[in-house]
Length: 113
Image (cartoon, rainbow, N blue to C red):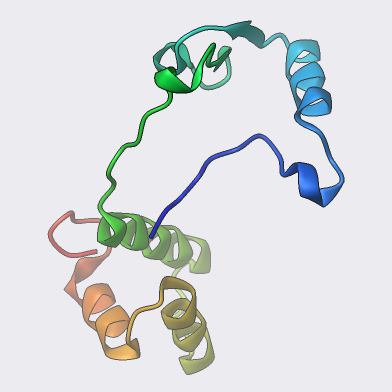
């Protein structure tokens, strides 16, 4: 699985220039710099060359757990329906039983969900 973070997809009819202009209007500094200088809400650092690009490995199960934590938090105290559990299984590409097990193990703990 490869996840790429972009400002917008040019193929979708939007160009990053509009997004960067909007960011500047909101007071975010946009500059050519090493991507490590990015600060969400403060600085957008645009690489000067491809050599400044890098990859970061992420634990996909932790991303899935985070998604489930947020989904359960939004549902409030109401129990999730079978339909909702099926949706979460499809969204996370996990077997329904895994989603149920993770939720039963306790949403919020890094060892559970």
